[in-house]
Image (cartoon, rainbow, N blue to C red; front, side, top):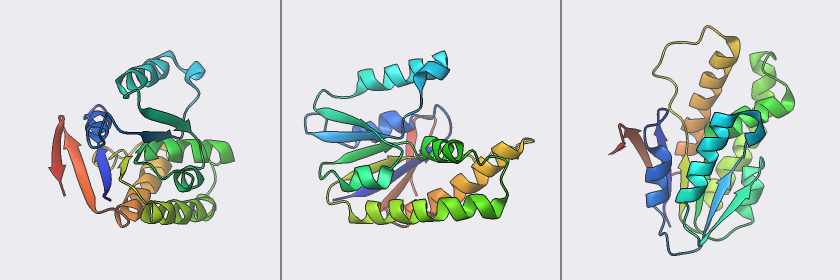
Length: 175
């Protein structure tokens, strides 16, 4: 079994590349933290495009508890994506304005659970995330909170993976 973390910028081809790493004809689980599509028409269109690309043999599971959902399946899994998961967690805690220590205290046990579940998964696993640390530092506190925590989350998840691939302009670069 192989664990691959696929990272890259917005519209870099991460999801399409990640999907290509799992066989289309075999059963697999597409695990997503979900995001209410009714809040944003553009987001709904992105979700619809992703769904149309998925092979019929794949099952979609939406769960904010990625660790539990991952532990409950023994099929190959594609998680898409950690950036959405982080956003949904902080949203669910209404913690965007909380201090650094408070957010870290809430997030740490979730990261530990997720990294443990990644390490224990018995089949191929592909995880998509965002690479947000190369742009300007956000002038908004929430943007800085997101970038800081996602950068640390990506580092932690990468430790449980066999391979990390960076997508740039649709091209995979193995790190």
